[in-house]
Length: 126
Image 1 (cartoon, rainbow, N blue to C red):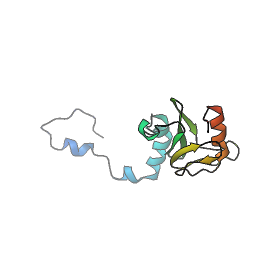
Image 2 (tube, rainbow, N blue to C red; image 1 turned 45 degrees about the vertical axis):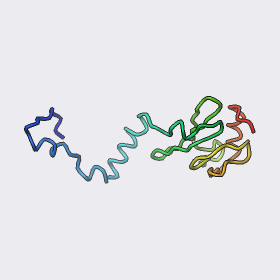
Image 3 (cartoon, helix red, strand yellow; image 1 turned 60 degrees about the vertical axis):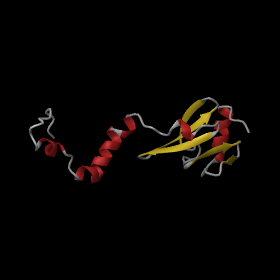
Image 4 (cartoon, rainbow, N blue to C red; image 1 turned 135 degrees about the vertical axis):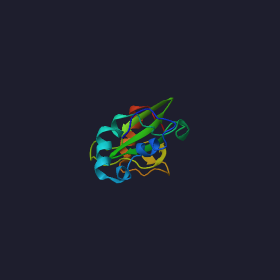
C-alpha cells in the first residue's frame, strides 16, 4: 500500500490506497485481526444511557469473548460472561438483575446463581 503523502494533482493516488476486497472476506485476515488487534484495543461495550439504573446490565461480545457490563450503585463494572463452575455463558442481551434469583425479562440467564453471587459481592440488593 502506498504510504506517501497525497499529491492533490495525482488522480491515481486514492486508487492505489484502496484495501483489496479480499482483505474484508479472508478468514485468515479475520483471525489475524482477532489475535493482534481487537482484543488489544479499547472497545465500546455500551453507552452509560443503556445501563442507567442500579442492577442494569448489557452483554458485549467481541470475537469469541463475552463481557457483562453491570451498573452497581454509582459504579460500572465488567465481568467475563462465563460461569466459573461450568464454563458456560451467564447472560445474553441486556436486562436488569432482579434480586438474587430472577433475571429481568430481557435477560437470558444460563446460571442465575452467578448473578446472585455478583449481587452479594457488590451490594446489589433486592
